[in-house]
Length: 543
Image: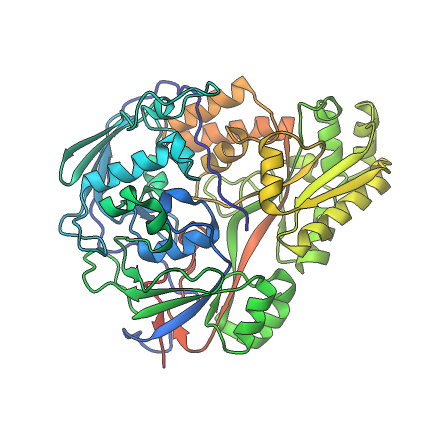
């Protein structure tokens, strides 16, 4: 899985009619149903294990890795949570939030809760954590999640070599022990969903004073605490936090994360009974997993998408007709069938099919396999000169497999014969793409943070945008969606998506489908396609 690198828009939002949004206190983080029918009521107690790839960090603001977020889901309560059943946003560490203009938000937090070290959780605990993540010199990975908040630019000056003119976000104001006022730079109706991301969790004073220590032995406010320190490349152990006073109801006494170097190895360990849950069964093992695990195997719609990114500032890729020709020369259905066992779904949109506002055929003929039409467009655009370099990481063997298929199809259907590969470690590839030093198309992945078209548009096309593409009309429509809510927001985002699909700096390839399997030792397995992943607190141990 790729890292999340969510980049909220820097565009100036358009004016919107004032609205009042109030969310009432919730008694639980979600109401999604377990992924299999229960044979008997769950009971508390016991321990279970979860297969995991090595995280990069365990301090919320320092990471956007899906591997890290799975652990943080048990250790921390951010202000909000997404319902695993329908994706709606509900209070978690907060009891309510309100706004009259989508710009100034007032968040009320629960009283009487503590961190795992006994320190009281207050509104200042959230402000301190957000300021630490937003402060540019700290170089925390989730930094840009806070770019919507007033004062972010002062903490992250754009001029090379310039020092921040402030240490804290001017848009954060602690009104009292349980109330935080947040002023955004522009109206943003999706803000409550953003509050569900783990980077918005609070931190105790010990963590902001010594983040390196807290990274290895985090001090959270969630239903589980870390048991000992993170044992790199081996395990992470969580134990139920006896003094937890939040809305979740942790069932198991302990959760053990066992760290594996590959999903294939983890699947073998699951079959052998050495681990209880694998949330990422390899697509190639779909039929085998279904046969072995029966109703303890699930395939669920996912918000994760793969794209082929194009460096549009390279003159060879400047013509949208050539970009469309590349797209129409790719047989998505054939590739997903051959490599992903038909589990992944060919993309017809920039967004996952489980996202509100998704349109089944938004991409139209551009995402349909049509070699003849592709060749005509290719020739009308003047063809392609020089070698075509395809960039991808070595994180998963299927990446090279589908890149090989695409290379062969571009050769056969468009006549591009000089196609080469640039395969490298994920960190090296990210650095190359972020610096704009690639000389050809690249694998781009997006893991949804929350169920909104806006999350894809911001994540792909704003700062961190590896294609280099920009468009003023697109920016205005995204800003219009940000300033609105509900159907009005979706309509604006869809129009922005139409522009991106017309220009096609990112070619949609396929929509992932999440596959999970678990042992007969556990019940009440609830997994969602967002940052939470497996809901650790809901799982019950049956033996």
